[in-house]
Image: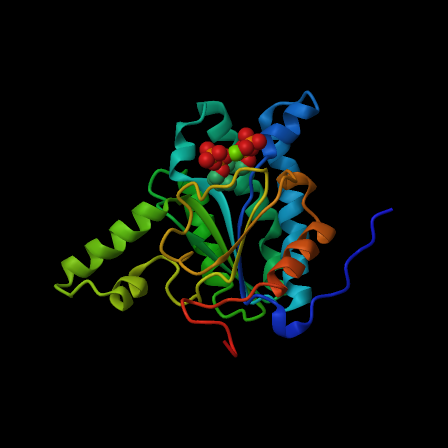
Length: 239
Ligand code: IPE
Ligand code: IPE
Ligand code: MG
């Protein structure tokens, strides 16, 4: 039996956790099932981790659900993913709202199905005043696109491109930078996730496939985070 690590002291809890939810396809393949089976199983992990974040006092959770590069997957997989987003959102919106969770959808959404876009806007509006947790879902998101669209906005307004101004136009504006990024599924890369925002984020990689990622795994990541010394370019305390 594996022992569960003790709970993380509250001061060491990251305010903002970002997750690259990877490994759904391989999880399904191991079971002789189509990739969409893994995506559906992945939704259960999302529900679990949202609950864990609320329980532990994490204030913001950003989940990478669909990258701009993911448009290049087979049309059937893309269609099934869009249907899954729509069904899941329609089913979960009330309980998210009841749990005081604020939803944000970050990314470029013009090529998304119209009914999904409408529901995303509705969910954002309905939950806009909620305070317990900001749940940002990155769909149609690309880190390079985000930086480019922020720069374009500043150009249009005739503003100077400073780091502060640029940051205020990123789609994550108003959220603190992630303290901890978790990537499941064994790959150690960013895959065009939050390129700007991850400048000083602690990066945690694990082999667990996303549908298998649960409370114990999340605890391990938080324990690891609690042990990091974040220096932000300075020398260690007392050095
Ligand atoms: C991540 O799982 C979910 C999405 C990109 C939508 P994958 O679908 O990339 O699963 P693997 O990496 O092929 O196992
Ligand atoms: C990253 O996973 C994107 C999401 C989890 C949504 P990918 O499976 O698309 O990344 P690569 O292709 O392995 O880099
Ligand atoms: Mg993958």
